[in-house]
Image (tube, helix red, strand yellow):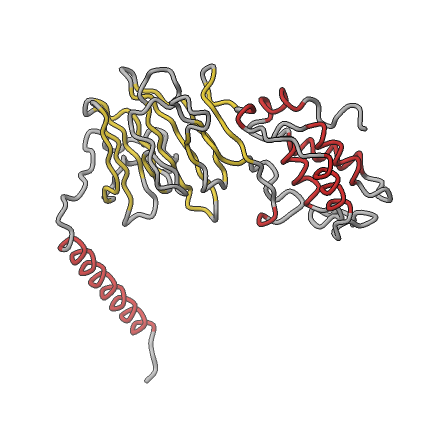
Length: 327
């Protein structure tokens, strides 16, 4: 049989009708099995762009999404929503009045994505005496990105911190110094994809503590014991004898440039744990003598490091980069 354009249009209409019929049956079946009341759309904000939402979102959350989590503290209520829309949303109300709303990826209240332990809503995270709450957002990207927001739930609602945790799905809040308040423990991803694939990119541990009105790098809580002379000598030997070394860098390379990742990984570990002198000693002692781009590498390394979220605090601790007087 020869198919005419009219018959093709009829087939398209039939397929479309069947698709909508099956979709309606699926939604009805899902609703029949759900004994909870569906979340109601907030009618008080019709046609209004969501506070702190992505600019292309013109209607308020939840927009038919299902309630996924709820937490209360005093007159505050925190709710998260998601599905069937893959993007989730967050709403925070005080005395039944909306004070914060955001449409994003996926949201968790009181915890991060890599840890099930919760920080109770209303806990004093900062030591200021005001109850707080944390909400973590995942952007739904490939292993990235995580953002942690800290809210004050006092007489006045306030977002006091936004921590860009990057790829740190294992980031968490924990009382490291046992003072009764929480510190944020995660990683610095300033060197993600720098001269290496993500898999091999170093990401030194960082600790943040709320001091003087914001979460700052708690360098005192990041320090580790200095390696012994024997341990340091072994580290130099390992880096110096690494098979990735070459005598010269390939032209216009941005990866596999003939300098082993072990060099800047260990430099970063030493810089972030209180041993900046050893970091530069490692650089000097392990650099391959036949390579003539030592100064260029140091400059590029420091430029990358200065792009860290935590560079202002880190710079105060480790001093100039590169070190002014190489040893």
